[in-house]
Length: 639
Image (cartoon, rainbow, N blue to C red; front, side):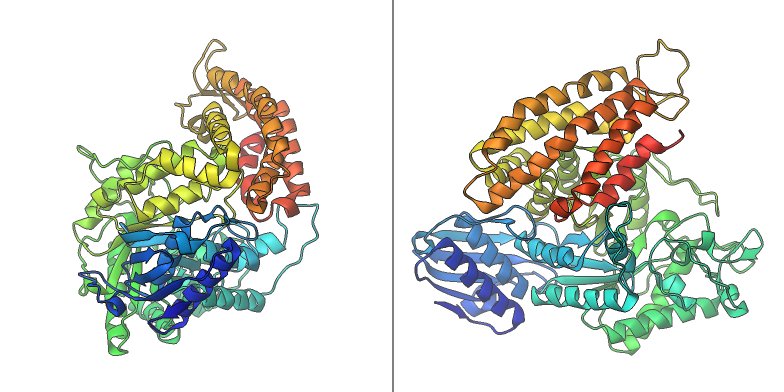
């Protein structure tokens, strides 16, 4: 018997989840109560019940209670108890749960855990279906992530990429309409709310909304602007027009107080209409070096105008008696902190640090001694690639804002594809998370493809586990994941993926190995030939070892394709696909490293065709659009 000590949708859902998995495990009867900490006389201390997650599990012999600091923490406690029974959530979607046969009535579990970081979650990106998104929200909660972010007013482009089958000529487009995608968003919001998670909304799109245009994505759009619209748009080189024909990327004339007020009024109205939004993101345009040069704007940095609007927004929300948390962005030109303005009510806000231009060949560097912030130069901005420089900008901002600050990262948006073994990248990711407290950052949201479980889900698993407990050891999580996902041969699978990752060398694939212009044929370091192909003799030698390694490993995969457990069996089915594309992928990068652009492209085309033809089998775990978008350009550029 499972008894709810508190009411509400999330705790009722927690009850259903516990009942469902106990039945699947074949457990006999249990007597477990579910409720808030206060229901069991437990002190929540200084925890903020909205943002902070603590779970307490006290079960012996199938009897006891599961409590949380808020309803979602009760749900997290249910999943933590199920993990103590041996369950694992190895990937999202059907057959993504490893569920052992276990009698929970014989399990004793005593846990008292508080999340080390306040914000832990994901933001929609890539190419997705509605089912992908619903599966991901479900998986995120199982992994104790408390935040989900649906970017834009209508996240149309992410669905259109998949249903329109961009980058896959073998599939017939099944395009969706804007109202259909808006309905998908509502369905996803419902699942986020059911789990009591923090729902993040909007971000980019406010600037185009001022113009009466919905910011749907980054595609070029033909719009004949009215004179009224033109007066709102940034003046660049004497012209007022959409920046490169992309409304979402177009900045406004922020020196015009009427434009600022119009923007603030739109955001305040949105907040009043969408009270289910936990954190409302207020960002400017999604591009840089396109700030207004008119007389009203040219002598004030964009961030000062940004702070003016944030203060005006706070006043309007206060007048409406709304306590909506507003997230403002530290990104592009907004990396430069304000010079004249300051926030009047910092408690209203949280800051989002988005180092989009950073390299992922090194983790956050907390030592910025000797670095100085360059002066802001309007429309001549150079974004910092060095990690230390990005941190330097953050530190400058923190001098004027000490409120909640979390980071918006891109490990799984583009960079993951630079590590075909999906293993070494996890080391950088883990180090980044572990350094967050030292940087006064209280969490991370990954802006990422929603299908990042190919060839394995290890980095995603590590991400969630480390956000909850930053002291967790990377190798321990790796062994836990591979054992759960691949059964008896899990360790052999782990070592294989680790070796593949090392041989490909993500630092080389990213282009971070000290590339220089080729001057002589005797040059033995990393260099770039006339075709833009990165040449590296050491990389070529290592990558050449991968096909033989794949052949040696294949028998492990073949013998597990009939594994009794459906989740493990599916892991090996995905691994077989991986091996089938791994060999031509290795040949592609090998010939690239040797400087043969034509042969490299020949083998890449084999990889591209393979994933396109097999997309239905891989759809749940591999974002074919993003793979081609990121890796395909490495073989097709400058030819």
